[in-house]
Length: 168
Image (cartoon, rainbow, N blue to C red; front, side):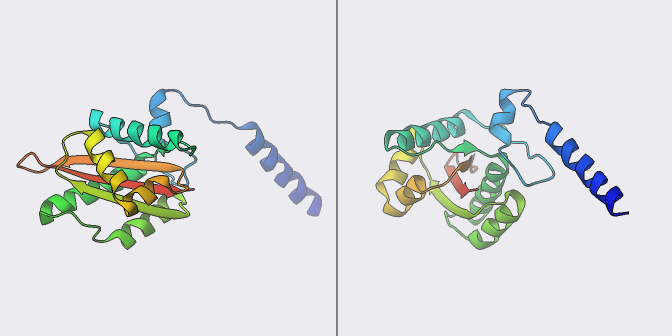
């Protein structure tokens, strides 16, 4: 019986080693990075969202930090928070502990940080504002590995920004 169990475990282990994953498209780079989740989130990044991620990574690289990898689950959470802020009519970090807990459980994050903003029109402007703020800059410069971003407009055309960082 013991021999059958050991043989079975060896077969399972070998099967796991021989099974590999491959990326079929660049979209996989934007939506999945070593995720713990069982369902793959989808998120279509707008031009301004892509620019914000690029600006953050240009800044981080310039100061010797690792680039952040986009993670769709974070952008989905960011989008939900933007919708909440638009409904409330104010910028806030309301419910951040719940968002952080959800993210930790969904993607196995070890730490979670968040930047929010309101009213900026360009990626450069919002990233510059975050960099001028000590606490926002600290989030950008922290030892995070992944990033999510959402930019949404209210009915008056004002942009709301939520940027979530995690370390895996």
